[in-house]
Amino acid sequence: MGIVLHDNPRSLCAQRVRFLLAELGLPYERRTVPLEAERPARHLAVNPAGGVPALVDGELAMAESVTILRYLASREGRADALALRARRRPDRTASSLGLSPARAVGRSGLRASGLTRRRRA
Image (cartoon, rainbow, N blue to C red):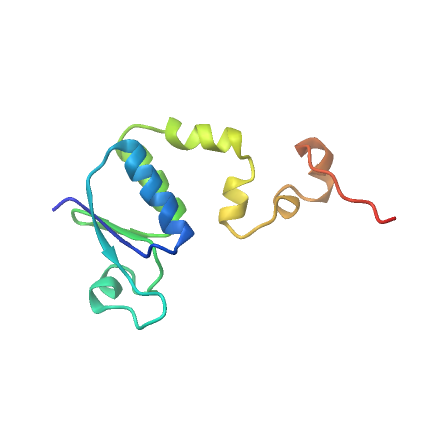
């Protein structure tokens, strides 16, 4: 059995995984998971929390887009696939964790990171 991606077309996190799968040229089976309805049992068997995306590769199953992206890049020996994006978008990891760039670098690190605060008039 090859790679199976449990996703939903409207999920931005799943979209990231689909982009990387395409970039790496990996064939995969796509199983759509409804967001509005109860999750199917086949999806809950892979990810009991019910979130998307989830990925199955042989005997290995995982959830969370960042984990999946790192796994795929490592599996294919393509750490550069993630490193290039990180250099272009330094806030990527922070934003994927639900943190704003200001929280990620802390108040004292704003100037060093190139971020600035707006001053109130």
